[in-house]
Image 1 (cartoon, rainbow, N blue to C red):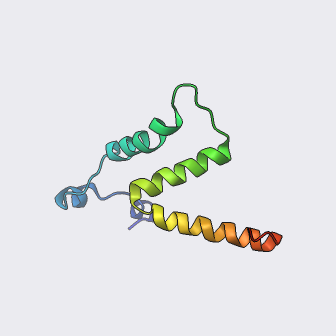
Image 2 (tube, rainbow, N blue to C red; image 1 turned 60 degrees about the horizontal axis):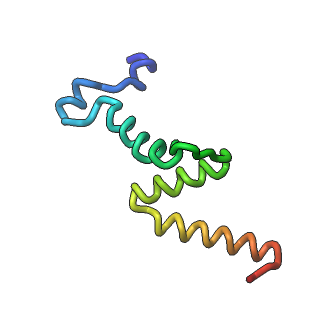
Image 3 (cartoon, rainbow, N blue to C red; image 1 turned 90 degrees about the vertical axis):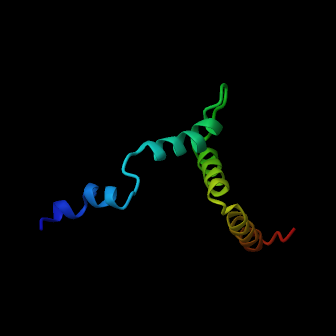
Length: 87
């Protein structure tokens, strides 16, 4: 079998397994997670802040916000320790 075909979706197999094939779910999730929050009327974002907001929105939707917050606190504490400001 050609390597070209190894990276393609096996539509017949996925239909039999009742897997979602279309991109509608992804497009809908993108609209729900990204556009509703970031593309509000009059809103503008710096790239760094927008990426952080998207990470938070994804964590909320995925149910991983607590873990994401723990990682943020740990990174913040490491930065403070490295700078010698433990307050």
